[in-house]
Length: 224
Ligand SMILES: C[S@@+](CC[C@H](N)C(=O)[O-])C[C@H]1O[C@@H](n2cnc3c(N)ncnc32)[C@H](O)[C@@H]1O
Image (tube, rainbow, N blue to C red; front, top):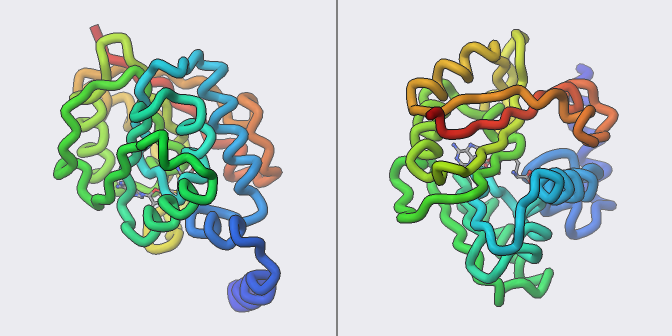
């Protein structure tokens, strides 16, 4: 019954959404899109992303996070991979509306990352709120891809749910919780090492939704 009223409330609210709230509702709560955009570019700049670096955004969605990153990086230095073509289509509209097509980001739609052909290694790989929606097999493929596309000195950042909880679904994807040892093992299997940077809240993410602010940010590098 609660689910029904929540869906009804969302439907009623959807009539009053702005264009961007409607677009970014494909990747999360509509009212949080700007905070999540600002958090992503703010975090990456604190981690010393420089305009001349190249960044790969896994699960780039509607470019909710991607737009200011594309604006900041040099032309052609942003790459995005997205599983759902209709969501990436919204990202392309967002790019045009932001007047940033001239920055020529490379945007690829594929539900299977191992079928993506990018012959390049990156200083930064970024995956915001996407690993939490991966089955173990897709996660393993994604980490394998990261291992093959991260420079020796590169860094991969991704937020995850650590611990255990009943699995839910979100827009057709699972929402998973795993122990930190699980991510350590998958990374080690692909020549990577990880560090837990703490909660999103500690890093400045303020959704006021406990299940989001308590997610943890992983910093993953090539193991030497
Ligand atoms: C919560 S949204 C976050 C979008 C974006 N990172 C942002 O913060 O604005 C997660 C996105 O990851 C995409 N996704 C899920 N599984 C994926 C996969 N295996 N490969 C690529 N994209 C995936 C979803 O379609 C969705 O657009």
